[in-house]
Image 1 (cartoon, helix red, strand yellow):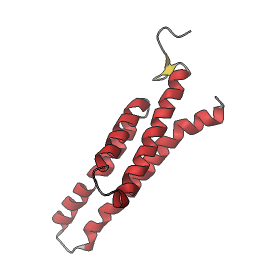
Image 2: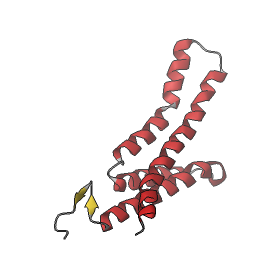
Image 3: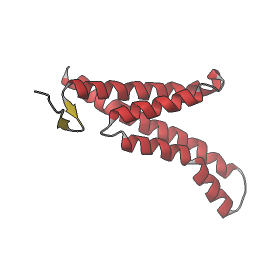
Image 4: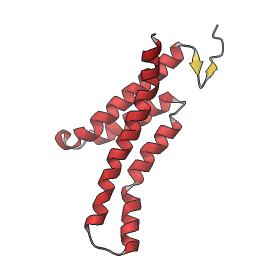
Length: 124
């Protein structure tokens, strides 16, 4: 495969997942619309940032294990499918795209004979 395609497949899911985490972070800002005390606002902000932390944790775990990113982001996308598609397509559409890109990245690395930065056992 072309080197530019390999580079694109390597970085695209990681960048898109990080941008998706930033997108989710925007929803945490609604905590500041209500006038509450500092403790309640801080607690609300932390609770609203849990999905962002989960996405960033998956990106961290999937950095060298793309198969994990494909499964985790695909699982999140499937979890959103039960909701009305018009309102949540903004959420599960990008998740499916990120999962597909992680899967393609994993398959590309595996076909190149590299798993976790090492040659696969038995590969020539």
